[in-house]
Amino acid sequence: MVKINLSDILDIAAYELNREEFQKSVFPEKKSRRIHLGDNMTLLLENRLTMLYQIQEMCRTERIVKPDAIQHEINTYSKLASDKSALRATILIEYPTSQTRDEMLKKLLGLHEHLFLEFVHEENVHRILAKFDMEQIGHDRLSSVQYIEFPLTGLNEAFLLSDKMSFLVDHPEYNAQAILAVPQMEALKQDARG
Image: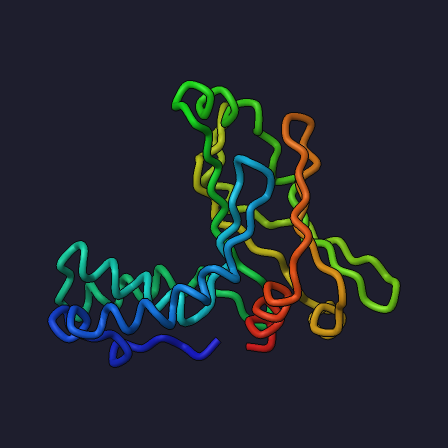
């Protein structure tokens, strides 16, 4: 990923004037990187453009104008963008009621051992276990938002040449698989090229 610099961030007034046009370029990118994993989990895979948008929106919403505060946002969000070494994502765990969500966040402990990226290259199936930020996992429940990555070390070339790709969860309390369409696969391969 090409690094996001302070000079890439528009001031709030300039962003406000260009926001609608910027959103027209960002929303298709976000759509191809939003993957529904069953009814209650969504993976949001990020790239430079989507992160740039997140930073601009955060500055706009929080009225952040000081360079050091903007740099803090850049540093925070840039860690979430995919590159040659890993696909990075935010996973959202969503249930219709807060009671059900609270119950399931307890039952889903151990999810970090059950979420995979799977892809096929030359009839070889590669399965990569998601790497979770363990600070977001309590001893009695998960957070409903998790930051994860799928390391591509040693598998980048096979990933780029793969012809089938999916994300899957095989947790005792939650099973789901999302088979990616070609545009989604191409978007993720573009991210993995750096």
